[in-house]
Length: 466
Image (cartoon, rainbow, N blue to C red):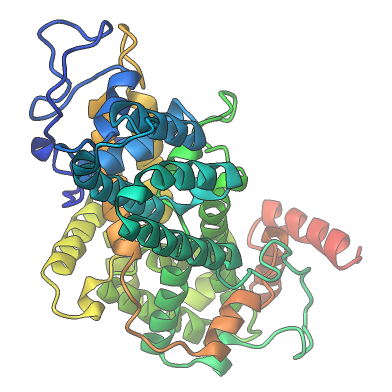
């Protein structure tokens, strides 16, 4: 699947300008490090290009691209150690007497680099040893200007606050991984209908957007790369989640939960008129999500309504005005590599760039497709070229996609949170797939022998009936 080709202001390849250094032994003669759209370079040269000097500071685009992709080749803590060592060596910070004039030109640039690094990739600094490197290198320049020590204190304070907020995480998905068994008449204490909590489609779409942005805010850009660092070659196209990608994994689970919640709400009512009412409600919610720019909730709702236990309810669907639903399905049609969705996403992204309000800035992409795009970009191009150089051109494209995502996830939600609705979205019990099928068969009888046999098997296993 080809990657999403969306413009991003964060990375502009033509703006990258390297420091004037002689090519190292591993650089090919006549091949500059970065020439407009950079192609490749050795890891050592790329690290050197990150290090500021008294007269040079790397472009913001380069810093983000390299810090994002470098973890495929070197641990962040080791990279920081190398950068600090180069700073000490090049600026002669280990000498008894420092060149104060030179350090005063270099110091602000070093602090700026550390500030950008800790701001964008705070999880790189969770280990005490990494903090030690920061304190050591800044401690060496502090005698030249006491303001450096104060700046370092403020930087560390902001970093600790950021890490503390990240450790708290968004509200947990209570029960999200534990679908309940089907019961013909679930007690009111176990299940309430969503329409009894929120009957306004626009309000629910706003609350879904609130949940999406809250969960997105905790996903670090590095998680997209780390999902594939130790990927199991036997795992097909599935990323390898770990403790370093926990927020990314939690967001995928949220999408799955919303799909099953939609299907559960539709299959729950005993009367087809009520089921049709729930379907039409979710169609209106999905349409409002589309208008807001919340494509992830939109796709989850459509996916929930397209699950087999729901789609087989023909008598129920016969009572539904489906014109609006077909329009939404068309927008999210996977044909042509989700061509219609990508067009809508570009439109929302353009609206976001020219927005005059937070409401117009909202862009929440269909997350599973974003992950697949990044996965296939990673798989489709080698990280290193035959000569051993890092394929930096690939990582510029990766940074373009991830950088745009960062811009979107930082948008402040303009909608006031309704705790009762968001609590329901997180905690309402959902049926397992078998539970959904059984609820569906209880609502509308099996139509063929295969369905009858499955119904009988499910009744036996879930309800203990013969």
